[in-house]
Length: 175
View (cartoon, rainbow, N blue to C red):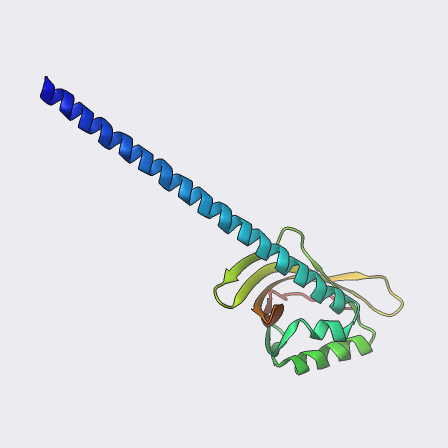
């Protein structure tokens, strides 16, 4: 009988210790997930704010403020337009668009944005946006809805776009 009691006691101690360890492990995982979720939310909010600032400047043809949001060695990959290398080439295209009076407006599709950290670099932003245009004497029209990826670098306390991939431009209605 004593041997059975001893076996039961050992089994109880083992089982209780195992279940306590599992609870502790679950608490650690939950705490880690809460920290990661908080960090992810902060990163999402930072990139969301930066995105709105970039495209507020774009929508207003404010080339000085637009320029501030990009790295000098920007690479812009566009499925129809090809590769644009360097911020000065991007700025030339923006200035030409604005000087033509091409009233183009970009709008982020609500709920489409995803943001992920890039360790020791910054963040990747994935989303869908709509572009609208207004030709002289006409009302604003939808040009299309397209997908994008922005690679953001955080350096010297500032977020800047280093790489852009813009794709799924199967139809562009600019007439």
